[in-house]
Amino acid sequence: MKNPNLEGLFHETLRDIYYAERRILKALPKMARAAQSEDLKAAFEKHRGETETHVERLAQVFELIGKRPQAKTCPAIDGIIDEGEEVMESFKGSPALDAGLVAAAQAVEHYEMARYGTLRAWAACLGMTEAEELLSQTLEEEEATDESLTQLAETSVNEAALRQAA
Image (cartoon, rainbow, N blue to C red; front, top):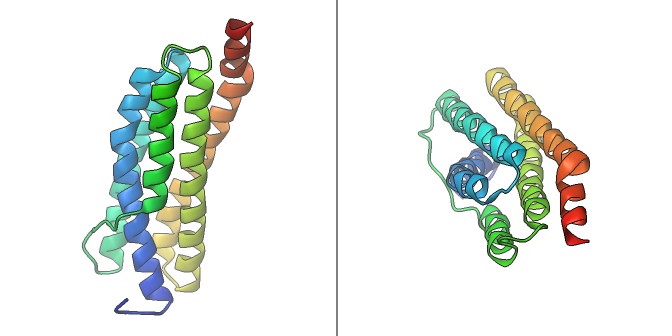
């Protein structure tokens, strides 16, 4: 690493989440097509629009620190998305597919929340007020998405999987 301090770590982590968000943009349409529940399809489509905004915000943060937006391969998100694709293959046509898709989507959300929470805290430490605000907005949206996925699972998806399996 060229700059082994908190600013350098902030930049490297920003590159990581930039890669992750762009990879998620590609995965969400596949997940929406695979979902059996119309509500789950709609949730994935809504989150795709939000993810586009997240990518734009990250580009703004890069600009604020005087760097061009550049991704760094993130093996963690690659693994999480690969697991989601395995669920789509293994449970295709199964009553449990949507429950598995929600679980996969929440794994993605939890990864994003961890990254955005860390980046927001570091931005605060570094006195990057504008970056902190942008990262906070995205963190709040990721938390809201996670909560809506939980609600969907608890109010319909899990029950539908259980009823259809019986």
